[in-house]
Length: 236
Image (tube, rainbow, N blue to C red):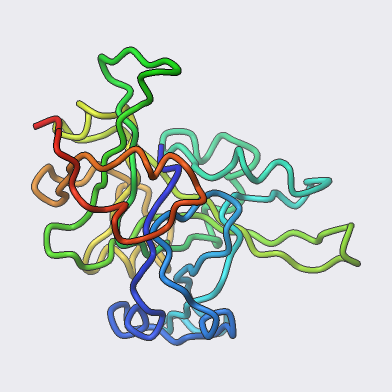
């Protein structure tokens, strides 16, 4: 799965990187976040409503809120969507055709669950996974809108990150990984017809680097560049 990530690249730089337009005042409030947690407001890349070519960066609530949700409680458990069942699950199947997005991240955290015993005195070991060149990753996602009944029908845009089975290197850490898009695949994911589900695959092993980091990231309150510094121990 993907339960925490890093977002430190400025929205203006993301707009240049992904050839997009900033279309949300939220971007003016941007602060580098080294420990982005579920239900946080994040930036997503989507196709413009009135264009087949223009891309825009817009805010979304991380944690999908299906249109039938009674409140925001469901969002915390809807941060990821499994690629293998997108067209089957009621929460996602109606979004695949027209509500695809990209979530830009500088990297994400994963906690090792493979061949380890954990307990109160042995917390799971976190790893930071990113591009070797440090450039932001484009993660495939889905988005939707929801009317909040507790706030006079306020329209809330929300999203989920799509995951798949991991490549052979990351499989030693966890049994899922987000779907990373590169190059022309980004444009095809955003606007391709029919939905290009073939793009939802594991990234090649050399596409991503990973190393263990401090368990300080386990606490959401902790937020700073020290979270992505390599720890003394590592898996490989």
